[in-house]
Image (cartoon, rainbow, N blue to C red; front, side, top):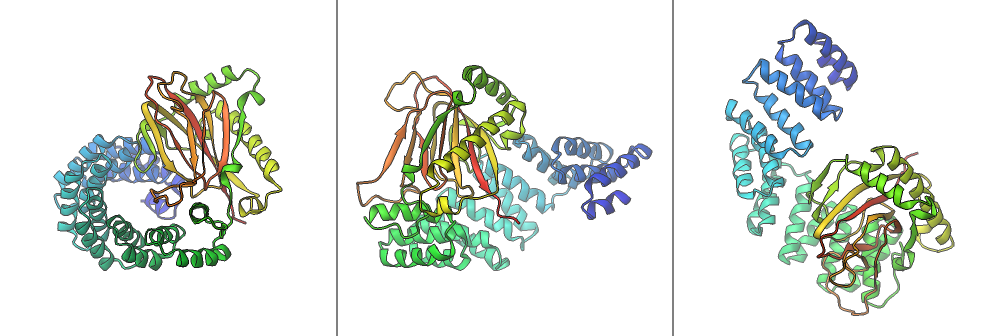
Length: 451
């Protein structure tokens, strides 16, 4: 089948054209529908892939792999219940289908059905005892439910099966850190030596009060890792806590680098423009409390919102103007954040809608350079002062405070406000108890270092 060859060569559009012609000639050929679905899936066209996988199943109802792949596409679209049912159908057809058990486990984990996920991963291991990813994901779940010894045991098995699996080593380090076994955690973090593991190791050293080693490492990293956002955030925090000079100097006083503007500076009738943005935002798929995100009691979109339509393109242009204005304002500052300002960058944005009692946990944006928020709806009816406000701080990741003179800043936004700040600066949303909605567009400037 020529379409299969095109797929293998990565020519997915050509594969789709060829396979579509083949299906017109033989409409009941299940394998052709399956290959067409796979082409759509590889292109990220999940709705088309779903239809084709279902056609494959229609023509061959015992096609186990079609059910399995259909589940993956449904999961990509957030249709987790349907995905689970599809994996179960795959297993019903082929009870030894370890991939379907594994995928079902992933799905159940996303749904916080941890005990069921554990059973599914164990079945995956039963039919493929050498599949390291199943052991790793079991370790992740045991970590989540506080069974740390079991978590470590399964990470060790995953690493034994795949010594190059840095993800499992990193996960094991995280678990040791949670257990308070900072020495073991540092050993594992140092063995993988990634941007984030370097910072995690420093955080463990902080818990051990080994400030001398911290400063030695920061001195070393200031030469080799000057653009590491997480190291920059940690260095600023510890310089404040130890009352010492910021060794890393990514952005030594990030709270001084917060800039506030407003849409009305670009759109005189800002209310109409905001309403148009909100109207367009209604067409964007959002997920409730998406996994591995900081949004609580609210919805958040996943794809880049600036690709969603004409109004968002206008908003993007406004933000780009604000970014250039921001850089111009701080251009004379002497720190890596300004001196190494990316000459090429992309802009990624997402929509967040918080409901009553909603908030965002304290976080930074380690893959970005400059971050920001555009406020579309803000909290007006306050039960307590500063509800719905944004709070900036040097502290993050629950590191204990030893010096109470910790810098922070709370800003109560108005509709249309645009706030920009270094991506290394911790920020969170203060929960609100009114029935209002808080709607924002959050965005990141992402450096493009390619030639």
